[in-house]
Length: 183
Image 1 (cartoon, rainbow, N blue to C red):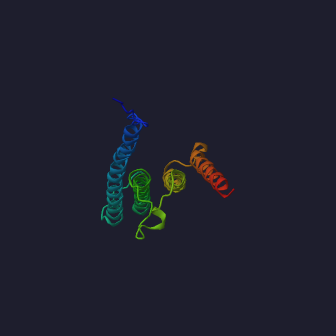
Image 2: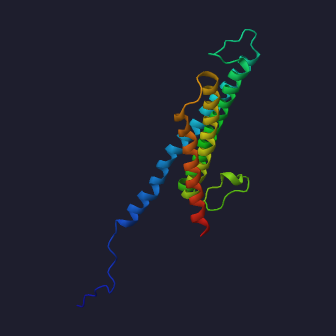
């Protein structure tokens, strides 16, 4: 009686595919960042809307309550700048949420046509660069708001130059990132 041995033994069961499947499924942990950012977007838009309504109330009030030496128009302007800041932060959270979703959760490489161009995120470098550009705009708004508050109440001090210097430093870093992309 002859016993035949298989010429090709079955491959041993490998743990690598199971590990890879586990790694692929961990991308859904980034959904926590997406949902949190969307909630933060809604909150910042509500806060910005509240500040806008406060600006109208302060400006059109019959008996305005002055804050320090500020006139109602100046106080309304500061509240509107604050709401602009809130709206920009909300949009930053929205962009971050969509960027994380498209980079980590959505595996569909084709981007729908109805998505605006500014929301299309192709890689993490694009996400970082756009968020840095938005940070420059946010810091500019904070600087103008702080400048208006400081000039109207106490006057300028040398330490107020920190914000414009940081704006210049971030803008230069963005410029250096753009130079690296063109080469």
